[in-house]
Length: 163
Image (cartoon, rainbow, N blue to C red; front, top):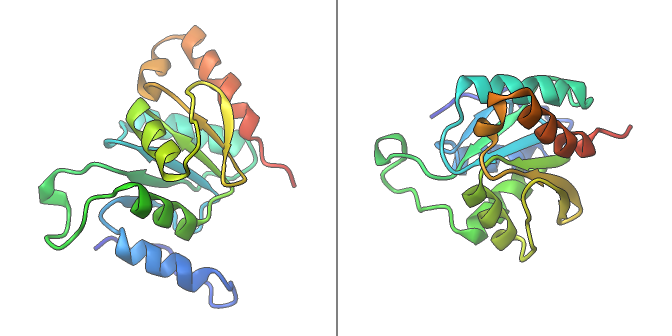
């Protein structure tokens, strides 16, 4: 089981978030207090994570990100753990309660859209249950050139934190 930042007892949502972190611990990595959630069908590369951390900070969220990986090899999941279907994905996202969400690949985008019964097009901002969201066909591929990075930035900057 992964260890997460200690929960604040003065936060009324801490219990729900703690239960979510425990129930989905194999699939969650990063900061348990993050306002910025990244959902991927598979593990992201270090380069992609670094780019998202810089983006998160530039958008006003700080550098703390919570990463959700939907599909893990069986060696990384608990033996009694159920797959993340659309109902469990919605439970996971709502339990984490991020301010915004980024889906890094087509499969993650499709599954987030299915979870919220919402169209979820890539490379444009949308909303999932009131939270701003942005998705990509393959975020990691966009890091290969300045032009592609700028294209990703145009989508991501729509998630700027408004105080």
